[in-house]
Length: 310
Image (cartoon, rainbow, N blue to C red):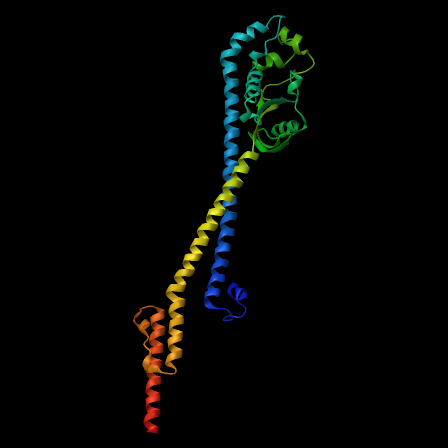
């Protein structure tokens, strides 16, 4: 059964205006539903793109802090760690990046942002990978060509989006502190001991850099935009439907009712009826001309009957 027959299982049982209104309402409703579904997909894609952009920017910012520490701070502070005095972690790029990220979280706008460098065998046990981070690291280790992982993660603050990159031993200088306790600075051993953070090898993936950014607010904004857009579309389509209904009534239904009235009158007294609509060049004019010919035929027939009786 066609969609039209489903709407009108018994055609002609309702006024034409009502049939047109039902059809138009069904078409506009279906159009709105399809448009909302497509917009939901589009807005969802845009929201995920925005979240990815924020995560990438945050990661790049932290990597810039690491690079600055490595190039500018480490050459100055690292020599101070050679003795048996106080170990200054400011020389370590990962410490600087995580410290800056922690300070950034003091801003309420960035409270749900985080940056962490987690390792399977870190010097500072604070950086020990948890089960989630261990899974990410192991995946990087199984596939060294993998450069990035991303997804969603549940936290006490809600679901967040994470982006992770591998930490790979790519510089010989890293092995000074992480190969054997004998090579490590004395101040490092005094601060962290000699039981963890050693045994790293060149080109080995030992950990992950992972950033998390909030996604709840972004998707909430997406939902608000979708609702607002759907509301505006509904108003616009409702306006189109009302205007279309008025136009159809003015151009088609009212002339058809007038022609019907005249045709009924012509069936009794054809001479008094004039179908002015026959001057129109559309289908209404075509219908009026047909009735005009029928009127004339009826008039001729009635005249012939009169002549026979006379």
